[in-house]
Image (cartoon, rainbow, N blue to C red; front, side, top):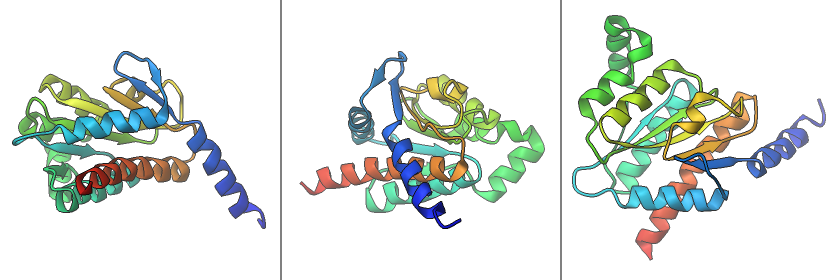
Length: 191
């Protein structure tokens, strides 16, 4: 018990060092190069294009937080599809697996970017959301963890995989990746 905090942060540092980033062709890239690529992709959103976020549980909280930051502080059109009325309506009428697919099918436009966050990388609703975004001509960024070969980890234009099987470290690192991208954009805007 006495070493839990020390072990937690030591392990967290190891997970950060083990993040795997791949592009849409499955080619591995250096972590910071992946951050820069996603930053450039988001920065290039123009006109009425938007940044969309999806995720369940803690990943939904990250989605909401980051959508607000990108919109309010970054001046980028951003939305998270996790309003309770939307989720319960679509879940009840169309099935929980479709809670992201249906709103993305309705609101996404070609050239938008979807950020899909799932610790396991196996959440059916997130996977169907990515498929719906692709069908609409959107670019996709994925953040996943747990198993190395999870389905989500190869579905994006850029994929960030955290090598941990624990929710806490995966969620913390996913959140930090999103903040790093956002903070990089903000720093560039400020010159």
